[in-house]
Length: 343
View (spheres, rainbow, N blue to C red):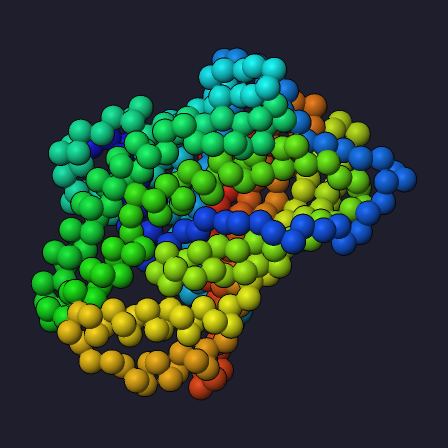
């Protein structure tokens, strides 16, 4: 079994439950603006053939109030960004996963006949272009790559269906229908590529002052409800030292008042389409659930070269039901670190 292909199967299993998002930006404005202390701009100064390696992690943590219930490392891999071409107006880069550090200890993929897919490591490399500053412009081989990832997801979904043999036909149809919405090559691409690549280039071309804060709206479409979740976002330069190492932080606060209701409606419609009765109690309880989602992004950049050296994306979701005294918290943490040593 190929280590990198196995890594994708692990993430594919997670995507069956946790769908990823695409985004749209609007209503951009300066909350504070101070040009008296000068400005800084993130610009990539890269050369053809240049390569940068990073250690990538993904952690899932679940709390009940202040008590940690579970903590699991679901990704530990070596990633590489390579400058395939450089012109006066653009860059072409290749994002590759070089090594799966968890392959020897992860049992989640042992039952999958991965070899049948005949997918090579090079088939999983992402090619994309940026502008002269290093801002992401377009993915060159996204369609082909999502097709390969769809093959992986189909095998995962089949495994999930096989595991439901003791369930009723209606329950199997329901879970299968939910999987069709939330487990696809597109979702896996968003989780394994966009999370790192889009955030990696998110600040290139951005010019700001030390005391400036940018406010904007970000809308993401959830694949199950097909409706947007709106985030109120704040971007600011939190630190810069004399060596030109700068830290940027983004805070995103979601409006979740309609999401729980919309997701419950999706499940009810899917239940009925699967031959199951409508769960009126669940539908009523869903309207009383208090859900909050916050996302925090920290990016450390070498301003001289334009290469990020560290990136952390934390998605925090809290859920509280009126009848419960506790609040459930889930933290999804993605990290990309230029320090390749074990932690």
